[in-house]
Image 1 (cartoon, rainbow, N blue to C red):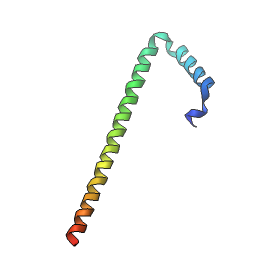
Image 2 (cartoon, rainbow, N blue to C red):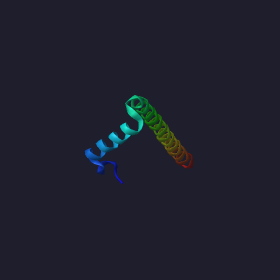
Image 3 (tube, one colour):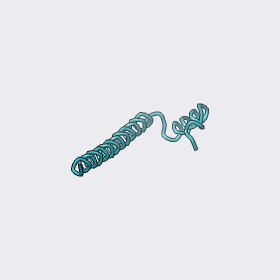
Image 4 (cartoon, helix red, strand yellow):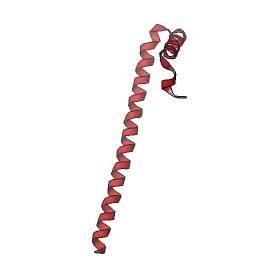
Length: 71
């Protein structure tokens, strides 16, 4: 299921259900927790991607050095 397929009416229904379940006092806490979680997830994903890029660059440098040594 694609998140874009939910649409605005679906999001409104979800928000109303969350409001009923948790109440208005808990919503800021829940929003903050979700925001922090997403921020940590993005940071971790970026770190993983950076590590992969660094590894690829090291391999390319090693291949270039090997070709130079063969000549």
